[in-house]
Length: 319
Image (cartoon, rainbow, N blue to C red; front, side):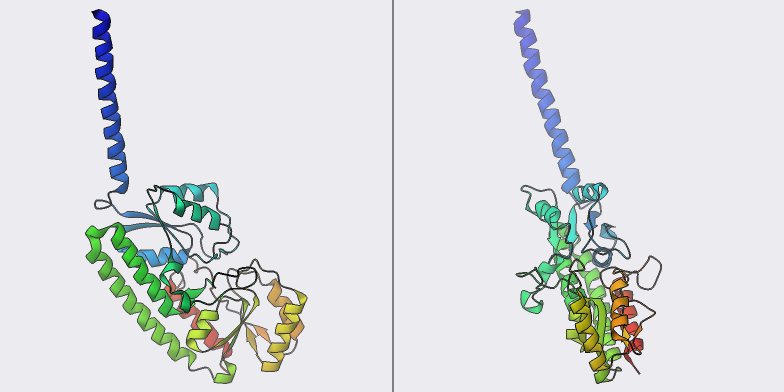
């Protein structure tokens, strides 16, 4: 009889323990997934995306960027700390289109996990493919990832992010709509401003030479011919033939200023200057391409970065 009673108590105790454990698991899962009472934890690959999420999400998001000012996303390798930040986030936002060249496999694996407690989104998915430039140089089948230099495409990214946040946190739909509407109005104003400033450059001088081919969308939207010494990715090799061909183009077009970028070393541009000879100068002010400026500077956000770039380009190209 004692054995029977002991066995019965073991069964009851085990059942209660299982129920308690199950309840704890449900509570933990609920705390992780219920976003109505806390901000969404968002991990972004770049500062550009962190700024976008902050603008659209406002007080409803806590944002972390893996890459800071001056970091080249094409060459970036994630650290162990980055892996932890990615796994702890409710939402992971990355550019896509192989911009994060060394992180692509990690990000795609996170996005394919089923079931997953996270949402993993590439902002490139918000841009229709017919508005994107097909890539080459070993990236056939994909597209140029630098679409943010066309402000109208960045507006599409902002709208897509708004919808993503609403899907994740529908209780605060009005908040995301208000935030995005205010930011989209600023972007529209910026777009008009850039158009007007580029028009002050005489048409023959509207030729932009940069360290790597990141400004195609800027040139296409605002009316500049763009040439980059390196290809779409800074991982692409630059040959002597590339340098000589671009030097010949610069001489023929009588270009007087070329532009460095904050996230790309200048040594290839120095070689280009030597090959050109004559009165060609490197702009004393570099452009921001794949990374924002240092915190506290005017270019530490998207609006400021674009204004810095267009002002620098206009100053360098106008007679």
